[in-house]
Length: 239
Ligand code: ZN
Ligand code: FE
Image: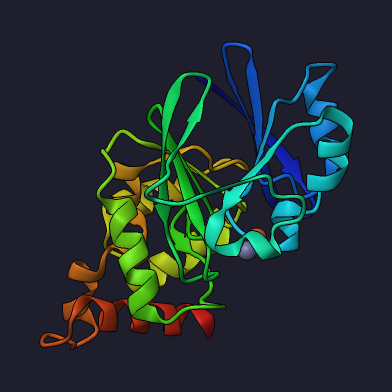
């Protein structure tokens, strides 16, 4: 399975996923850059992680051009333009003969999902490089439960997220953990494109996954994980 990065809008990423004769796009914010990246190839599937316009904006134009079915969260079908196949954790999905695991990861939106296939995870706006999405349609315990599902993926899993926010996320992460050497190194060596990340690296450098390490620093020794996560999110929102 091969993944290609398509920069869209200001700081969005769509992705082309190619396996055998199948070619899917994940979160097409807009059609034009996807068409350019296709360079004459035929799109077979359109995948959406959540309903926000900067992830589904290209759905209808691409569907019209290629007749490609749109696959997205069953729980949010009403808000996914042109959706043909609603998926959830039970249904999973299948792409080019590969089993695709669907994780329901509410928090950023109620219906958000992540697609896990062949050692790759497409996280949309749930997990970012050194960050996580804002809590627009869920509370902190809900988002923490969602991130906890992603943390369970193997360390080698490649992470492809919906936006390039790594630089500003690194600044926030360093403000919390200036002595975290993995983080210092990563921030120092960062290029303009931070994807793909790997789960192991996120566990070392993403403050939203480092609840256990930050609990003491916040003086929250008795607090549960979700409460510590909420404090990290609160600080980021006003950073
Ligand atoms: Zn979003
Ligand atoms: Fe987004």
